Image (cartoon, rainbow, N blue to C red; front, top):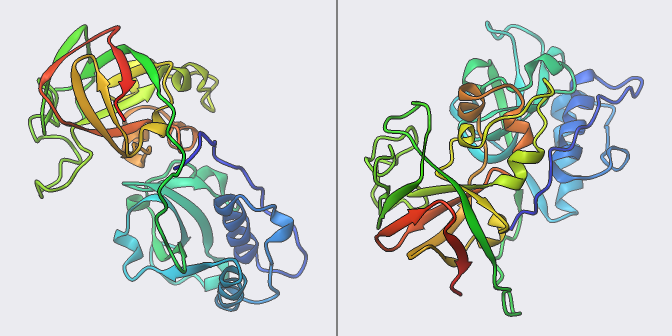
Length: 305
């Protein structure tokens, strides 16, 4: 599970004799892997040769750099590396721009060569190449120790009747098993990300911690109101990241934490500049609603197992 880590800024290194795009790509790798930039190789090669070098370097750490077949249409609920060209595709490879993307849909969260690209949606950019960092031998582990009990409260409840419509704060809402909150676009199967396949999980309910929103400072110096985060439940006093994979109760409604509710370029477009970067790994929780029931402001949130 991810901890509440913030986006790591890495400046463009000024290593003499190395193409700018290679230096930018190295900075993105350092940020993505939380590795000191000084420990990430900066090969004296063009981008193609540098990527071959990094693949060997990453393999020694149990990871691989996987090329994306159709990067212009790629989206991923985590980090990935993109190489941008000009709109007509005529720019030489080493004159292109390497950026770090995040979210579904994806947006730029680190751009050492051109900070003006921060927050730009991948769909609005000329993405020519893309790469995902992957473990060579992935394995899931189950915690051996007993998990601690967690407890908090509902600070606010918000719904929106239609996709992209403003969120409306309410004092209480009826939760519908397998659907979400009555009156919300996801319960009506009309949300922006409502899946076409009914077997998909994690779309019923979204939660975010009031503590995260209270301390959030955007590049403008401002912040966003709790309901502007576009999550259904604003909580206080409970570690939402620690609820991934756990059953919990909100009032008398049972839920199951499915995965982190990571930010994306769509959220930034509907709110304000800087939200995507600022909420990485702190964007809240996606959960399934397992039982019908009522959720009210002030209701207790507590783990069941």
